[in-house]
Image (cartoon, rainbow, N blue to C red; front, top):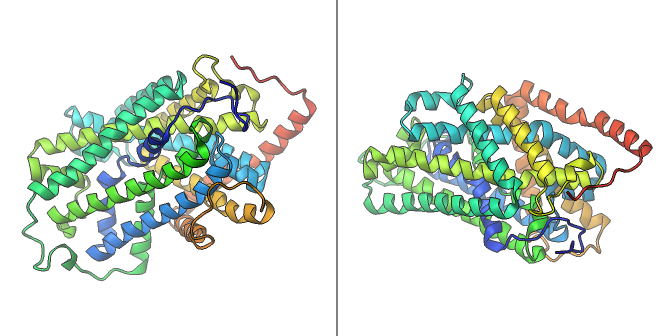
Length: 464
């Protein structure tokens, strides 16, 4: 198949529902199974608790609506990299790639891989207390080793083509969506409301909650929603991208928001919010109430499969960033290697597999998760801000989709991004400074690379 008008050497194979599966599968991991307990610790007023999840859903929908305009205008591999490059130039795009290499993607692979392996071991009968403790700043060697194995597995699958990765992603997404939907349906159909609920029902659980706890809870909620933007990274392999990408972004994001709200409602229906505070795996507690002790094993298995699917989604999407940057000459051209049979960016897949494996073996879950959040959100904000820049600098750009609610919708997302980063700056000042320092070290790296590249003859990009 010849390259299309965007100059892609990767074949467009992903239809609408595969694209939706990439988004949903990259978003729904362990967050909705575990995050509600942490949110309840900060917001023990049920109406405000639910409002916080709605606000989080509104924020990601605003991001999806904005990215839809960018994805339809630039339906190429690389997603956010392309948006930042077109809006702010090559240096900003290089800093994104630099951050993805050293901060963002290894952190994501590590955090997801550790969670998937921890709940695999739990399903197989490992000590639940030890597993719960392992997802924190302690020695987690067994989970790290198994997580590294998972990274190698998804790397191998995606090495042989996105169509194989898409099959795995579709299957895992169907399973995780089905498991979560089944938990909601069975919980409402067979579960009995907690006898500790007040006379007025769920919404009668009221408490005084300050602004600061509410805002802190939003950090965890936005973490649980993260993954909605990953679809744009594989924009160069989506069929009919000008139509498919906006539709998939909206369908996928709305699906996640609805599932998350439904899951929280069934949690609150069966467990009072005061008890939810100590329910680290609230979904398992709900399953235990409905189907007995086996529910813990079932939910642990669901989390293991769910997070494994998220890991595969990340491996499907992330290598395309480095492929696009290599084609632009911002990193070595060898990274743009495409297998002539499978049409996969094999060099970029190997790069991500190696980096993810190294980081999962040397860092803890908490450090990896914080590293990812600090690294990715400045570029989420930068890409969204690019809509304002491009509307002004390129008014005649072909825009098959224009952001609904512009300029208010992008502004809502930007305000949320600034809040999240400000919170991390105050709460994790040292980690924030280290990660920002690593990202900014990309400036001299960019200048040195461009200086060397301008002096050296351009290498040919190998297709084999």
